Image 1 (cartoon, one colour):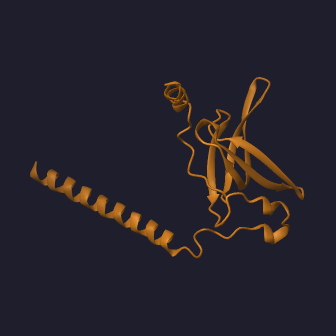
Image 2 (spheres, one colour; image 1 turned 180 degrees about the horizontal axis):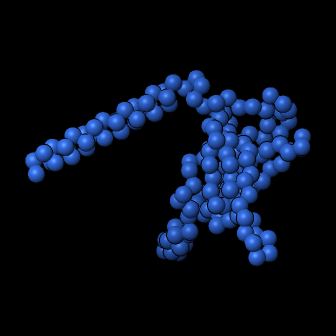
Image 3 (tube, rainbow, N blue to C red; image 1 turned 45 degrees about the vertical axis):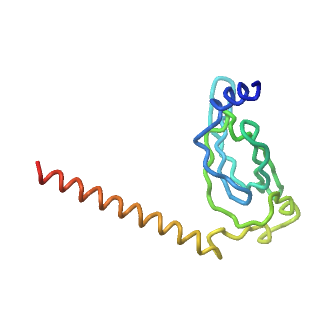
Length: 150
């Protein structure tokens, strides 16, 4: 009973505008910063090295390099301070936690793009765009048919 109440309260506070973010993705996290009476949005760009928790407690850890120094920030995904998350590119990884990136320097730190070597993903996107084009053609034909009848 208490689980249902807790779940119903937290359900309304989940941020539904967040895209599907997975480990290895390069993301822009737009964070609201309050300085006195002013509020601004600061962008933190980096690679997602960890994702943990679930529901309202879900967090991601993003790592970036600033002045040859690694900086990691952990963001609660459903926090009101997160204005938005934009995925720049999807990285192809085979681990759930990318702590090994902490030791890597230079080009070795790069992750392979998910689209490369995964032809099924590209085919799936092409199939979806083809279906969308067919739907638009059918709607256009239906609109022309209803326009010519009247």
